[in-house]
Image 1 (tube, rainbow over the protein chains, first blue to last red):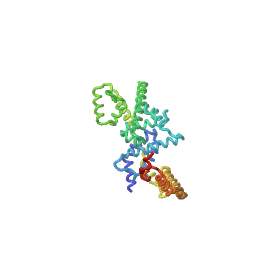
Image 2: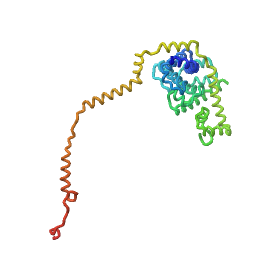
Image 3: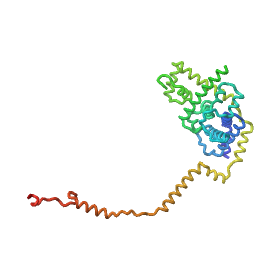
Image 4: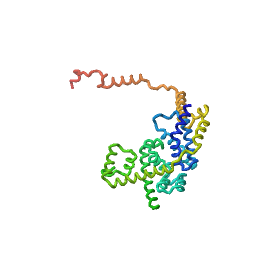
Length: 166
Length: 155
């Protein structure tokens, strides 16, 4: 069956990348596995809407991002605001605090979930501003300004943690 | 970018390949002559490298059994024909459908109840009035030509 073959290929080629992306967002194996599973089920159902020639990773990252945002909203039990200025408690921070002590890891944990998402997409996944815009659902200009703000914050935190550790 | 030094934002855009080719060349040439900007570039590159190192350090394989679980769940949770119909009634679909239905009901109701109201204007009255006014105007088109008589000449 063509649909199943599509799913098979998707898991084989992008399963690891999707799981790692989900893991960096959630910071724990159980949530990352659930997110990855749910994302591939959405892909399986909507496989016909995928346009050949477009980026599959952008598509599945968008699904993962939306599912993660919905999950955060559900857990908070209130309307989730993307621009919350204070540091939101996210599982990844707990993980990073417990397992990693490098300044960059700590600094990354100090970003808001939205800032972290954009930094990870731009610098780790190597997505273009346009692809990031498609994933997080905003314009290239917004991506640019959010990334600049996030990098500024990251720079500040890295310097702070570097000084405190040396 | 100001006249001489690119801003830190433009350096970040440059490192992400998000500037025009002309600007890319200009910034690249600038780094060769400006140690201050070169230092900023190196600092940004170091942050990106550290982020990638962090990503590599935390990279992991998919947990064993996850791929199988995805395959099984995807097939098990295939929506039935009836569920597919119901999927069409998601809020995203329902709102525009409801809006069109409401508009159709409004337009249908309005045209059904609207009665043809005859315009109470009697065109013939206007024509007659106009003709009468034109005739009474001494210099109008419809007035008789003005002619001098001998009576007019005598005081």
